[in-house]
Image (cartoon, rainbow, N blue to C red):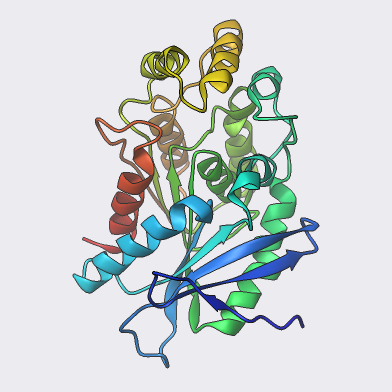
Length: 298
């Protein structure tokens, strides 16, 4: 077994990281770990697997830390899956979080050459490599694990639930990109319903109230009118969406939730709570806080 030597993260107390080479993905990941500050080291505690850790790890660990200190949620290990370099995160996540090659919209709006469809390998990395590793390194309660993701990460989170590629106790899908591949989410849901008699999980889904088709179009127009780093990409997005149709974000999350609820799975506890006044860029922190409180709070 490869020897893991965690390195302390400067500025984050009780936090460390280490790199893992994955056979499933044929690449390496940087794993960030936040350990509960006041927990008994002899007691196994729940863990949250957070995707996009280069951007979300700090938010997740501070949110969980504050809510656990106030008693709103139990203490957790926060396990973030990220990449060694932020510069490669956008292209890597586009592969790791997407279940197939997508369609015309996905090809036209890719940030760089399209390289989609790596979700099955990424799911295998989580199942067969990461979870056994962190359970060996830390006192984690393997019967209480949450998977949380935003945007493409939210897509991967719901795809994992619907395909049972990553089976955990809880799922938090924040602004999930389930418009993917002409809303292929409905096919995954139908296949699950055809084969499963129960889905044992607690699920929280959210999107920003300002993520309607109309508001997203206005947001893209705003990026085009400005001089920000995403201006050129916004031009590509507008051309593709005007041609093929603007994706649904806040419109689709309650529909998927109600469809799953209608199946009557005895072990499924699911809620959609879209948050007013939040955009695609502001929803991650608000959605994570609301999600963790729904799963473990009152």
